Length: 126
Image 1 (tube, rainbow, N blue to C red):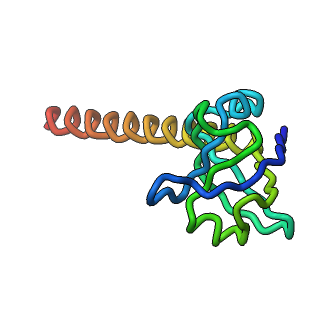
Image 2 (image 1 turned 135 degrees about the vertical axis):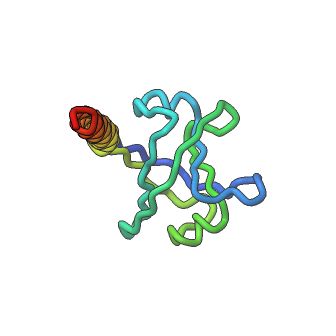
């Protein structure tokens, strides 16, 4: 599932904002985003950057607030239209990968513990 939304890039008033975009809370909810999610911002020439996303009700629903460095990377000026894109499957697959890694680590831990227990039992039999 992919969500796309056209918004207007606006320079953030927050000093040092970098690596994240701020959008209106209603846009955030309508795109079915979650707090940990990242989004792709795409300019008119299809150049894209990946940023974290935060939300509040102070941002107009038509805007996305970006730091100066992110606007430079994306090559947009204040008021330029950008597309905010979110790939739900990407977010889901990252969570799945984390869960699988956790399961593998648990299996390895249990295997090592079993080996140590077996070694200790064999030493006791001598």
